[in-house]
Length: 226
Length: 312
Image (cartoon, rainbow over all chains, first blue to last red; front, top):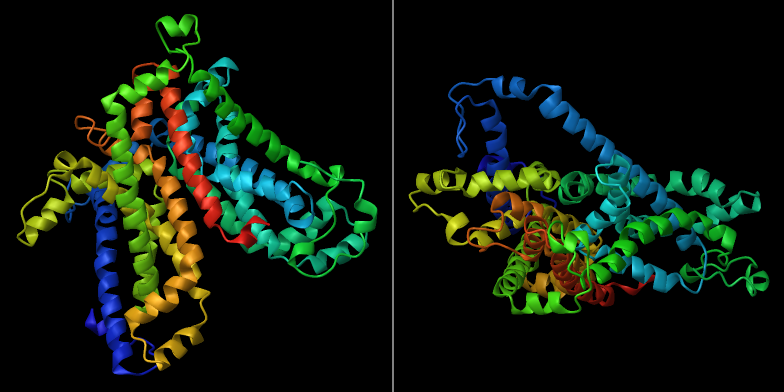
């Protein structure tokens, strides 16, 4: 530990800065360990023939656990389902979000502020709370057990935050570049596709990854409509 | 979506520079791209919310009387909720869970990590932040299972405590709400960490330098320079983590299932039990509506705290 702190590139070479760096590194190690242990358990236990609930170095390593689940029934079909569900919903969300954010970022209209406030407001609503009405609605319109319905619901539920993020990144793209596209006669969609989107690629990537990861992490929405 | 076409012609003159004059007025054709998002939100957010307003006042059920013919029962679902001690138990637990895990845990730890990241060894910071983010992107179900084994009787935590000579804990039984709160800190800190480290990196270094020249120590600099500058980020992050935590369901469901004896049954779990285990959709929706109202109230506070430029 102390050996690794020796070669910090200290900008201000005072002993005080160095001791602060050492203390920070030590604190980092402690916090890191707290985050590491549960993760380490799952990795080690998956290779262990006699895994227990506690983190431990396996006495005998084996790939047996993996070969046991390496089939369509337990792994591949659920995995494919997850990919279709989350991937589909991410495409739905990001397409709708970009299309919705563009006019909101570029044009003026009186309802803009209330509309944006509504969107921010709905990012805060607990999705868990509309689980039951969505379930009953899906039963009534016969969308239960349908991948399409689940994709649309999952897509819609992360849409407000995606619009908010996308609009924020879009506001960062200077409007002057687009103005010349407009003078050249490009329409709204054309300007969006060939000028704005390439310029906000990194922001778009952030929003897309964030959307996908948050969908990949939830279990409640699919469990209510599939 | 109002379009205000009449005054458009004279206003479409070359847009002035500056943030408040981005582009022209919105026309119907220009608003058209907003349609898919609008339809999705109306169909899958507004629709269910309105429907839940109706459902909460009925005796709708999955089986039994309310299933075949649903009838209007007025406010009796809400009266039932307010007189049910299990309901109040879950409200209290939701508050404890939110305050311990989001308001205190994730925010303080996230801020600490963001501050440490700037000072600690670069490779070490990278490794630790990767771990924290890994805990965050793990699916809820996996995180719940991992943390269950961590806190379990023969789990990692007791092994570690035993190794350094401390008595074993049984948080999952003695204080399950603390166990799930810690689990939520483990899972959610990455978000606060990322928000705070982004906010910290936008604070210019010379502010600190001049404060240091004036003789301010590290604690003083944090209190009088960092905190005021980060106030908007802190407010935003506090609200966002609160809102996310209010609706946490899967993590608790996997770890404890709300038990033992409802000791970790927060509102979403109570709602789920009433609606899907007991089949009382109407009553469950009434509880959901109350949860929605709490979320809406928190969301309104969040709106007020948000910096003005985000709302334009």
